[in-house]
Image 1 (cartoon, rainbow, N blue to C red):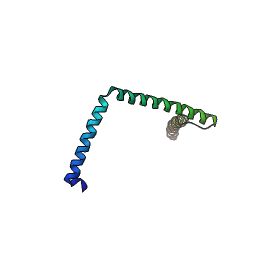
Image 2: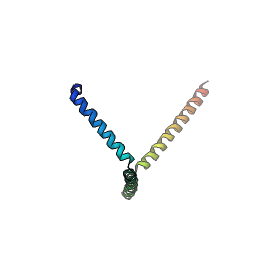
Image 3: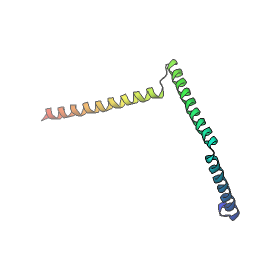
Image 4: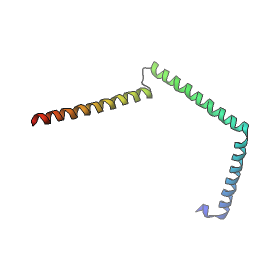
Length: 99
């Protein structure tokens, strides 16, 4: 309802235009782009350090990590498939024996 107001529409359009110009200016500034890239790289490095420290801490506390749980889940899935296969073969043998 408020967006139907012509004054609000004009303010939104003006704001979008100014933000667009500012974004364009920032993205054309090589120093700004380099700074953002450096910030992203440092953030990823910090995340890697944090992940490593967390894995070490969990290991020291004898608690499983996410990767450990994923490995376990995959092994359980493999066992379920194997059990299903064995069950099918047993059913086939029982059915053949009854004939």
